Length: 145
Image (tube, rainbow, N blue to C red; front, side, top):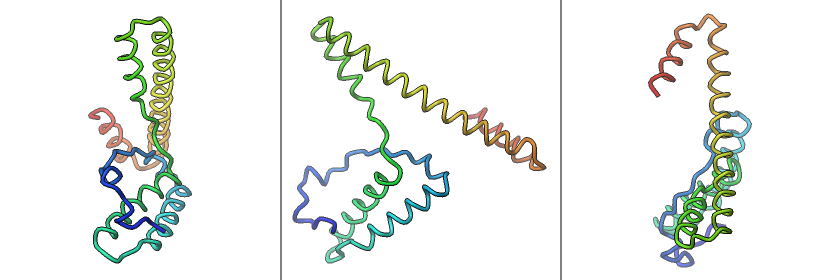
């Protein structure tokens, strides 16, 4: 059951940005899983007052997204490590920052490669078919973005 409004503190009520891997919704099985989880969560909402109803909706969406899509990694650790190294000028802090920086760069490169692989597959799909107008529109959109 979703928590009632009285149990939620003001700190929890503040909207902290949560990021999810929404690009996974393009896969039909993941989209179906998300819809299923969301409908299950929405049936458990306590609808006694408008605020509990709203909090229930928000919490249900976040829980369903976390369970079915997964969250994006937070890259702010690199910034903290960099600032720590700047203030201390310690060799160990620099090594830690460089390690975190390599990990973050690797994750970013991996995500970019996945994105471009998906776009290339989409272009290849339309280039060989009779839908040449759609393929050229897709290429034009890639160029402008």
